[in-house]
Amino acid sequence: MEMETRIIDNTVDFERTVKFLEKEKTVAVDLEADSMYHYKEKVCLIQMAAENLSFVIDPLAIKDLAPLKPIFSNPAIRKIFHGADYDVRSLYRDFKIRINNLFDTELACRFLGIKETGLQSVLKTFFNVNVDKKYQKKDWSKRPLPKEMMAYAANDVIYLLPLARLLIQKLEQKNRMTWVLEECEDLSNVRPVLSNEGPLFMKFKGAGRLKSRSLAVLEALLQLRKRIAEKKDRPLFKIIGNESVMKITTARPVTLRRLKSTKALSGRQISMYGSDLIKVVTNALKIPENELPVFHSVKPPVLPNGVPAKIKALKSWRASKANALDIDPGILCNNALITAIAVKNHRDENFLVTVKGMKNWQKQVLGMEIIKLLKKFA
Image (cartoon, rainbow, N blue to C red; front, side):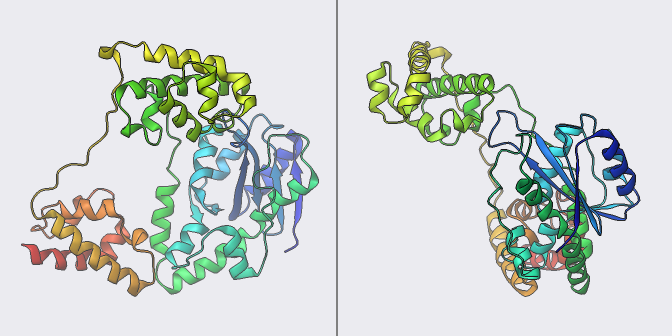
C-alpha cells in the first residue's frame, strides 16, 4: 500500500500537521518506545495516518506536544489503534494525552472470533501483506534514525484505516459494534500503574515462596539492581536478569568465590557488580530476626456455600455460549466477572445491575440467560 509519509521533527511542520489532522474524521495511531534500552521508557515516535498521508512525529525533537491533545480528546475524530492498552498508558504517562472515541482493531478482531490477533497476522489475513518486524526491538531513542526504521514505523499505521473499515463492517453484520465500542471506551481510560513505596520483592515472581531471611536478601539485591539501573539508565533485565537474582538469593554468597560458583552471572557482571552484591547479601544476613520482611499475599476470599456450584454452572454455560457465538470465552465473560455474578443475591431479577465490572452489552446479550440459569439454584 503506497502512501506519502512525512517526517515531523520541527515546530513549523508539527503545527501544519496538527492543522491537517484536526480536520480529519478518522486518524490511525501507533507508537514506538525505548523500553528495551532505558531504565525509564519513553515514547520515541508517534505515527499518525489519515486517508492518503501519514506522519511520523518525533517527540524527542518537538518538546511540546500539547497541540495534539485536542485531536485525541475530540469525540468527533475517531482514533484507530491496534492493541491500544500500552499506547493509551504511554500517551498519558509522557504527555497527559487523553483519548475520546478510540477504536481498537485488535479488540475488534477478538470480538469477531479471529484467533491470531497480532497486527502481523491480521494484515496477512486480510490484505496478504507480510510485515517485516526486524526493527521491532531496535533502540528508537537513537538519533538520527535510519530511513529504513522510519519507513518501518510508518508501515504499521498506514493499514489501520482500511483494516478498521473492514472490521467495522463485519462487526455491524454480527450486531457486535456496540460491544466493541463500549469496551474501547473503557480501554481509553486505562492509566499507567503508579509505583508505590512497598518492597520491590512484592512484584517479583517467586518471592511468595521464600522465607523471611531470603526475602531480606532478595530485597537487598533488587534495591541494588534498581540503583545501578537508574545510574546507568539501563533496563533492570540488562543489569541482572530475574533468574540470576533468584539464584543469588538462594545461594546467599558472601564471597566472590561463592558468587562465581553460582554461575548466575557472567565474568563481566561479576567484575562490575560482584563486590557490591557480596556487600548487600552480607548486610541482609545480619538483619535481626524481628526486623525481617514478610510477604503479605492477598488471599482470595472464602466463597459462601453454593457459590462454587454456581461458578461451575456459569462456566459451562459460558463455554456453550462462546462456541455458539464463535468468540473466546474469556472475552465474552471473564472468570472474575463470573465469580462476581455468582456471589450476588440472584433472587432479585435486577441483581445484574449491581454487578461491578459487567458491561451494558453483556447485560443485554447475556443477562436473561444468566438469570434463567441461576434460578435453578433458588
